[in-house]
Length: 117
Length: 109
Image (cartoon, rainbow over all chains, first blue to last red; front, side):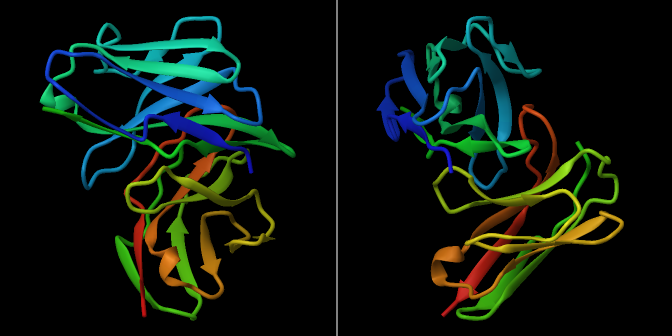
């Protein structure tokens, strides 16, 4: 299957600082990527859709000025958590659809665990 | 996306088959049934998908009822590494996936 990578796999930062997370599709091009977050003992929740060459679309309740998304190329999307606070501590996961046969299958990155002190 | 119902948790003995059911009675005609799993602290892993025919790959088999209102994921010989949360997701197109609560499968030695 297609491979999606994320970097870093974990990060610890101080409150008020910004953190950038990268999502790359390694062996396919992705005009669309999705960003999810997952709090402990909960399921994945979609945060935003990243579109190559255009603005991201955000889910209701997700602050677009706080979670900056840039999709600069067909293989890279970045999520920047600005002015991070402890409540932003979570597991952030990206995914991208890859056409396999007659349908698009989504492949996920390994996730980035963010801890804000 | 169609609503799904899965058992909250299941146990399976190592080496035995694990059969994970999913009800998706409101699935649309063009939606595939996708199965993913999430091992602790990892991103979800694609397992298998199907439209109406049964499917098999190197990881699992997928049985879809004729009316498409339910399906069963079969792990033929479960190992400890199969312990994970398994998600059944009706889906089509390039939209984001909607995750429910899934089934927590615990494979016992």
